Length: 234
Image (spheres, rainbow, N blue to C red):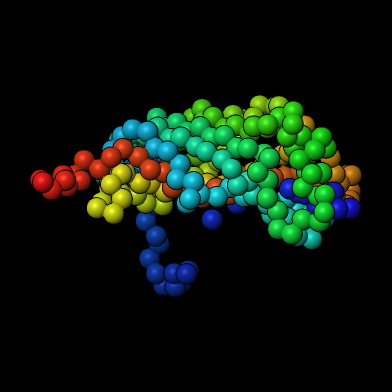
């Protein structure tokens, strides 16, 4: 059963009141969505943003028999973001994860080796997990839906992440580079990637469920601050 503890998501009027006026025609939903999704980004420069690994985390959760959401993380990963704040839908992001960096809270002896082995991540044969964005759609002024290809366990499939922009700046005297921060979540089925070991049989909860919930917290450091004070003359 240890192996099954695995890696193992928005007054009625009175009777004397005059009848309500007819409702206005429904607004065009497409235009409304685009208007509400006008990007809300700070005055940060366009360019390449690199992950600040000291301010980033990548965790995932799976239900264990419906009793708890078993939580684990990867400690070694990197990401790069190309961003034009005037056109955030044209942004692109790539990420790479070392599955050997899987980390659990208090794993029993040998458990990590099991999870890194052939039944689960099979890190010797598949030493890297990758994500490459393919499309970004603004869903709110500070939110976007990122669709991309996830390569896991030797299988590449599309997944969707819901990302929220948390803030940023162009730079300051303490941090002379642009900085932006995001949170992102997503769900995928591990069986789609060939990792079906321990999934409960139909009609039972005995095992580790198929759905994997991912949570990402990230800060990115970008181009140098153009208003940074020059060095004092000697």
